[in-house]
Length: 281
Image 1 (cartoon, rainbow, N blue to C red):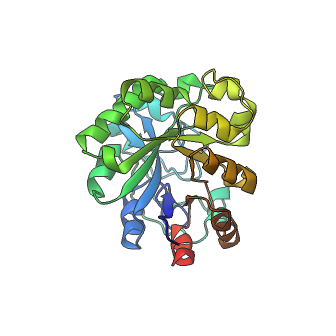
Image 2: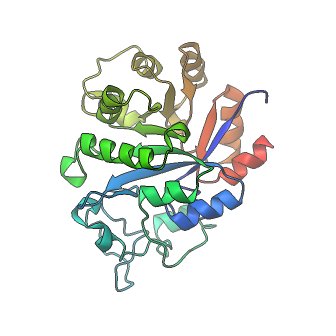
């Protein structure tokens, strides 16, 4: 290829190492992965942390006594950072759906949910796509989008990482707020079929347009991050014609990787970035 192709490890490299953990990011970087997608939430005392689920996930979380959680929760937003550090996220629960999906994941018992600052500081030569996790259907589960966005930007600034981050969200209130206050921050616009069908909720009042690429282009792009399973070749071509980069998620099978590369996407977000790097080589 003559152009740069962006391969990003999803939540670090979830197919190989515990998701969104410092141990996982460092292990994936040692394998040659230099760009990562991660998720950011906030603790009750205002610390941006790298975590996907607003409620602690029983498939990956053990309590301070070492027991698997019986049900989702508590909410990250209800805990202090110190309280959050008492939970272990270094292993998949045996016989869980996650364990079935990622049989090759290597455990790191004792891994904790890290702060965003710790991850950015530990990997100064890596790039990051930072997904800000808010849900307009469940506003009580997380910090408000403006609060979480501004706290995330503060961490990025303190790490002097503006030039190596891309910020994205399914909840377009996030991008709209960041664009108003920090036009220097590069943005991506996450979509999946559920949020497209309920755009009135997820897209912060954006009027329906003929296509999803057209809606993202109207927002100024520059990156569209669609669910790979619903993406079509025609949409990729349309997005490129509109000046967008296309960065689909979460692409884990080599056949899907080859197909999307053949369509001309600009990168892949994958739980198995090692496989994608092998194909690219």
